[in-house]
Length: 254
Image (cartoon, rainbow, N blue to C red; front, side):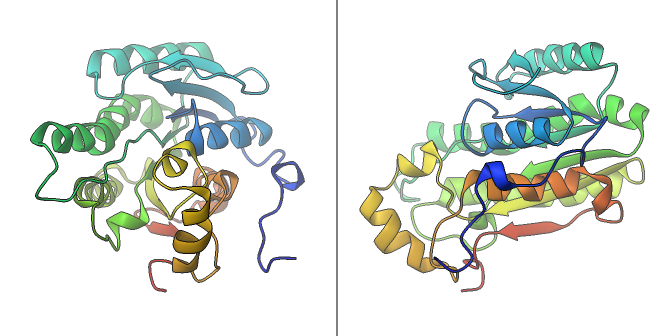
């Protein structure tokens, strides 16, 4: 058996850990966001799952919403819908994001702007739209997804790394400004087995080139990242705010 192999999602003991909490998850149609929404539902949360395309395949009674995180009006409407349906909001997980692998001297200005608009500005737009509801509820939580690239970038990631480093700084600023009513933290995943990552590498490259970059010798599974968001969205992390949690199998130091 592989050392430190992940538990299967069905084997995770999460029931009740988010009982009674009402949480909006962006980027919920696929990848890490979808895994977060699934796990939070299992943990007892009421989940509003938001994406540009209507999220499908979620268990339970997820409230599925369509909105582009870069459209402030659409985000405001979606957040208001979720808050009305749930009688308020207790938490937010910002998992929506896009990637870019162009060299810095070749990335188009339009692509550069789009990556920052979605990853950084989009996170800010959703955070600010949710803030009144989180303050009203008390003990509000925000988990923003950055990336290991925001901590230790490598070549062909200039736009993506810059956007994710911005998310880290934004999170730290909000943690200061919005305390004590709202805790704000960042999760920085490494490479994770999602459609976005698979779109950039072949299975052989993931196994032979990407995995060995990590101390644990493999890329992550989406539910392993979702578990970090669950911790930061629960009362278990009640004295944690402003942190940058690398969930990256050791790449940021290895």
